[in-house]
Amino acid sequence: MRVALHTQVRADRVAEYEAAHREVPAELTHAIRAAGVTAWTIWRSGTDLFHLLDCEDYGRLLAELEKLPVNLAWQARMAELLDVVHDYSAAGADARLPVVWELP
Image (tube, rainbow, N blue to C red; front, side):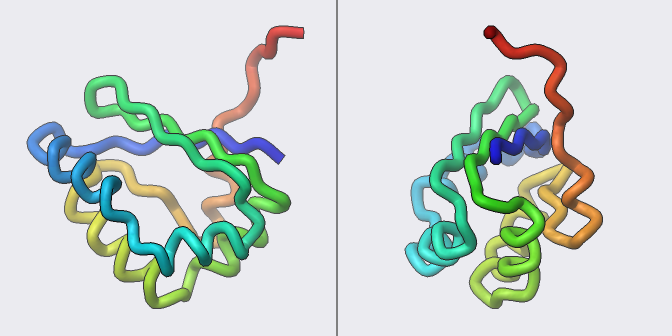
């Protein structure tokens, strides 16, 4: 399944956000893949961040990462840098961006 998300970085923390993503812990990337994600790309336009994930089951991804210590540490780090964070709780499954149009 393909999932699109929107978050926002704080205007004064863009450089830190980008630097953090050059150093995503290997333990976290392994956990993300183990939870069924095959691809995750983040684009930035100003302070808006757009995430596109390909995964087996987004609900499963959230459930597997929600209480994982390496993800909790990463989310705490991101919370310092973001105005709008990625919601890893079960409610976050409804935070996906709806598809409006796709090129046939």
